[in-house]
Amino acid sequence: MTRITKAVDAAYTTIALASTADNHGRFAAQSPWDPVQMRALQEDYDFDGIPGLKAAVVGDIDTPVATLSHMSEAELQQTPFFQNWAKPQGLREACITKFVHTADRIGLMGCTTRAGRGTISVEDQRFLALLSPHLRRASLIGDLLDQARVTASLYREALDYLAVPIVLTGANGAILHANAAADQMFSVQGPILSRNGLLQAQNPVVARALLEAIASAAGADASLGSRGIGLPISGPGRSPAVAYVLPLTKGTARAVFRPACAAVFVSTTTSSSPLPEAVLTTLFDLTPAEARVLLRVGSGLTASKTALSLGIGENTLKTHLNRIFAKTGTRRQADLVKLISDIGTPLAPAG
Image 1: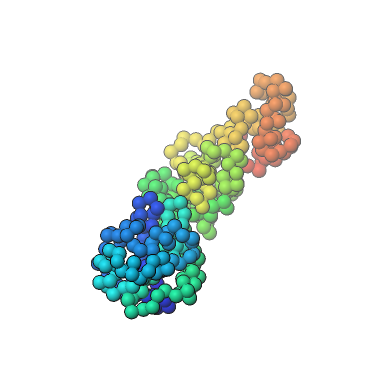
Image 2: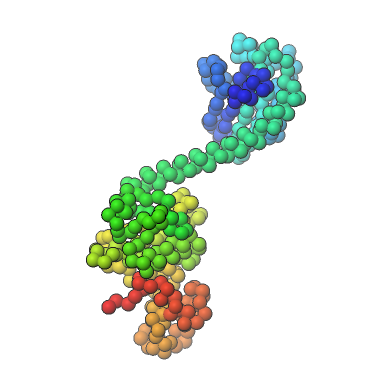
């Protein structure tokens, strides 16, 4: 702002970002200038009270508006603004450029000249027009930084008060935020671990299933189910523990935590691991009946034995299988066997 003031041979330069709803916003003035007078400028003069301001606001973006291009000097000098504010400070005219105009906000840059200086020239206006897109870019970068700060604050305030360990991750399991309870669990090495910045379980097979569930949460809600999934993560000789993977779905309140894709909650108070049917129900959005069919077919039972064990007819079984194939992206019963094998330990039959 100091360099802009010098380049235009101005007395001072202002940059303001204001809300269109209540006129509140951020305001910066190039120093040195009388801070009392700058407060008076903001507090005592409204939209219509400052000559040239309305023309700049309703005019085109990136188009500087010089006061004396809209009124004669005699007309300007008769205004209350000039008599009571500009003249006592030895000021002459201003040139205002609108660099942001959205439904909720307006951004303005203004350069004000001294009484002894000539009028704002076409060259001065061209210089300010060239600056305008750069100011717009800077304001957008500032918005992104503000959003990041708000999100980070929300992480800390909303999650750190919870006693249950919670980890927010990216699609590959990268830890983006861990609350205090999760950090404590990391420090004692389990049942969840932080290795090279990635969330891990102690058992390699379970670790793979956990990362697959996180990837499913990031990739598409339909593959994990909007309710998430619970996976047993207990280490050898340790109390039961379950990691619940919840998608941070776009378009819902959970999206406030993005760019994190998944939230992993760790429970050590559950008496047992989730039932295999529950894992499949949430992993592929199966119905309970479809999950029971998938478990049996996936364990290697034939269609006839599966129907017999569940007490259903073969036509009903065929209907269930067709839906399971569609939901899991498979085509044959052999694919279902491989699917259950790939998921691994969380679906291993008891005993």
